[in-house]
Length: 165
Image (cartoon, rainbow, N blue to C red; front, top):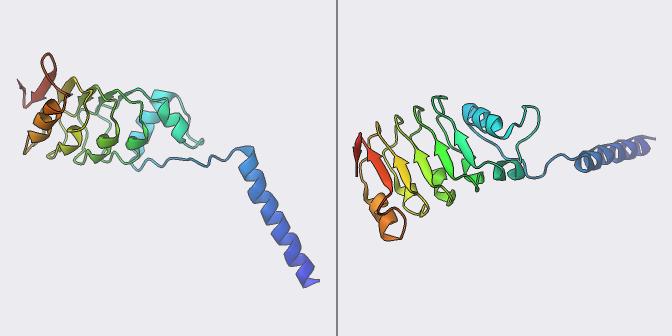
């Protein structure tokens, strides 16, 4: 009797797990650490709360305007592989390492953040506009490396502390 009850519970649990998978619980759900970044992404792709963000959702994102949203972390943004325009002006961002993966970026505005290391920008060869005004950039050699590798060049714009370079 006890064994049959346990067997019924196991079967019921298995059915629940299987049915959840068949109903469409996304297997590729992406976690966005910063709630304000998640809000900006959801607004941009018109995805309501209550529905998980998937890798497919994030591939739809091409432009993200998240100015002044008090974003601290970009964790999860690296899944937005088709993003080519990114405005993160006036946030609290210090680590931009996730941008390394966004190889299609053409425009990046990081004005008025807390960025000191711009190494992640070195390999973004499609960049033609970068603004970093109001940060404490310690070394611009990643931008020089970007230019040497065929990225930034004549006709492109880089802004550091209000002066074009």
